[in-house]
Length: 79
Image 1 (cartoon, one colour):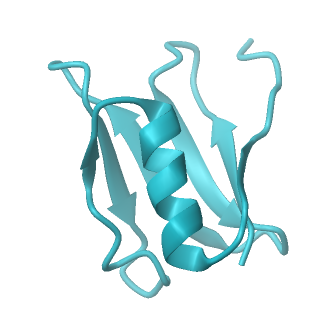
Image 2 (cartoon, rainbow, N blue to C red; image 1 turned 60 degrees about the vertical axis):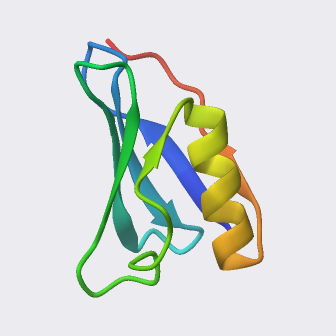
Image 3 (cartoon, rainbow, N blue to C red; image 1 turned 90 degrees about the vertical axis):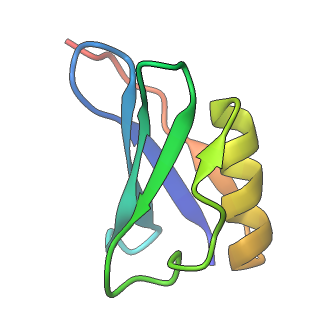
């Protein structure tokens, strides 16, 4: 399954996780310690992915490995 990571908000430290069909899979948030926390949707397929990562890239790599697909960042303006 492919996952799309979309920035949310204006701070640049929060992202939504959706599959290519637009179904919500969870979120990634950067915490005060600069770590990236994955919060899976309770009914989604990301429940067993490791939660804490040093970078967004490492979080995305863990998601891609878990879903056996691609995890891509959707670039857009945060305004």
